[in-house]
Image 1 (cartoon, one colour):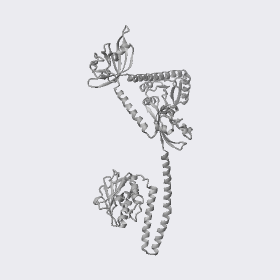
Image 2: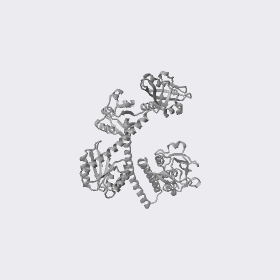
Image 3: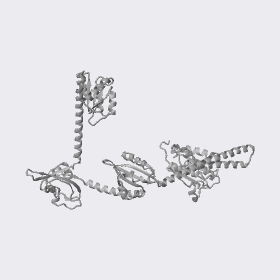
Image 4: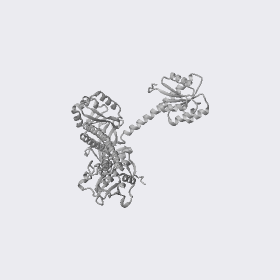
Length: 615
């Protein structure tokens, strides 16, 4: 349905659909402005009102569900000013009284006479025009209130001698006087000094009221300073107009003024900010362009010109903005780029971040966002960054990761299978014979399995951790000690300070990776210190420490202990401590090696987040 500004959009609700269609037809014939929609139930009418804006509701009284009065009450709750005409065949004083009480706009009784539609059309038209007139009056009053807010607040009337003969309260506030004190004071009185903006005294003939007297016509935009003896200064913006006597001479001047001291300070602040922004614009490593709503370049930096090989004259001569000549010749498919530019420029709320590939091989990361001022959409700011090298490095890294994955597959398949064969054959050999060499073979197989596990973890999983959750640290220590072989080999584990577990609780961690970290630290102690080693796990203020009473690590070797492949033991793989460091960093923890209380190695893991729900 086409609706013009003059259209009167009517919703007619009547449980008889045939009658509803008849009313709609006659109303639209009576007045070409009418556009009538129909509904057969009050609930349907409420749904239509929530979907479409109507100018008037016409409703029957007797309807299933809600009757006309109940429907009117529901409409008034949601749309208190919407005209509502009760159009019913049930005419009674009780219904009319209830309708009036509920806020009905008009009441029309159905008749068996086609002339009733003319009456109904006239009532609808009058109701809608009255509502529109009230709305327009409200809008005019609102506009006037807004206009009055912009007028300078201080108003005074000054006679030929410069004395105030009238002043409003705002004027008294600006002049820092009681309202009763303003009258009879002189504009250039001794209580203050009138100066120009440079701080120089203004001569009498340059005072605003004198300029109005001498010119005999309005004076606008006069700025001067009032300075009080205590050093307080105010900058006033003054407009003035003459008042004439019966003989045509100027009898007094009416001056309106406003305190613009804050505005002057604001101007200085804005000037400072502008200089800072200009400096930031030039210091940016990105090419930056600001265009107005017509896509005309208005601000840019040297990096932008260098990036696109343009001069300032070439850029400023381009009146089609950053979507055309600025980049057209550099793109392989300029028409695609133009479609993107048109789309993001047409929607001032949309921001856009994408990459464009140039024919010279460069890859540019481009970001645009709207610039909005107090009046709404103003233009756009564009950022261009050359990411060619970053893209190349990403591709190299991707290729390296692919090679690492292939390597991990080889290690997993081509080494594990022979190891499984050797391990199986070793078990068969043990059944057939006894030899001291078999234990050595078993140890070698175990070491090779640990090497394979370490290489696979570093290649596949060492770059990340899973989801973290509260993990019981003491329980994880016990589990890691069992898996590390501490119980089988016979070393001693001490948990806490002097046998105490105070300070252990739950920490935020990937439980599986935390256990792997502890296993590697325990294996490192056992491999380097032997079966009689004592390993202590002690709480720290922001983490925990694992130390042994072995020979320790030389000061010169400590910077290298976390390097992959580094080991001072023939039994070590060189991957265990590297994995420890990877897991710690993946959690955001720090790990360092130092000397233990008994001279052994001490590893401190800090930056650990203890969970508040620890028991």
